[in-house]
Image 1 (spheres, rainbow, N blue to C red):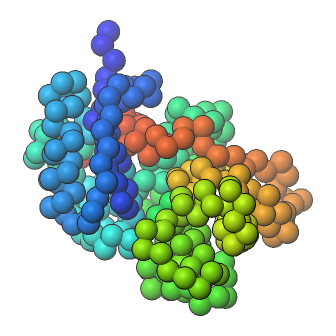
Image 2: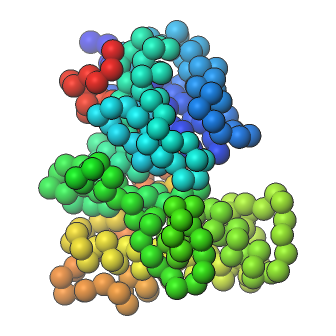
Length: 308
């Protein structure tokens, strides 16, 4: 019998990654592009450009979308992304009209958690946190073997836990949030403050390479990043009592630069007696986690089609 396939769409803060994924998690084809700027029309035009040839070639029977921010899976609306400023965008309705297929959306961290549960290192774990650290920060939470969404569907906003008294303004409007200091723009901002210089082309990935090459300021910035992430993880684990935390996203994948500081901070803030044997690992799915998560969500929710 032919395997089902999904058109998976991973919308990032600065890039678009799309592919055809089968129900075993195999990526049959993929396409990528960078955003020079972000708006509703740019997103739709970019999706049409990359996805239409794939849809014609593979004839998927559903579409899954990873949203970088608040999403309403029931209505298919992208509610808000503080990084790109996209708000109240009925993206599922738009894509359903474009491709004539059912569309399933969710927050990227929730989708990543679903992918890790189905395809990755959490297959046998019922309770865990997935933490995305990229251009933004967010978490997907599994409790008792089910994705936990919260009363309004917005659970897991770990990026907006306060981790410092330092005056770092977060895109959400608050100060000292994890996202303001540990996400890509926050890392760049802290490095520039440390060296008192601005470089227009500087990125968190560039600073990571500099840290790997021995740049003292870059290494210090990434070590402090581990402290910030460790505080947020300890707070979440103290509340939820999960045995596993999975790190993902571009900065999550560079965890070798800060994992020692992260684990030391977790040990300092965790109620150890209540949370024995906590494991913190980088995702087994690499940079494909959100794409696979979009497909996983489409397969999981495929029996309840919100858009046709």
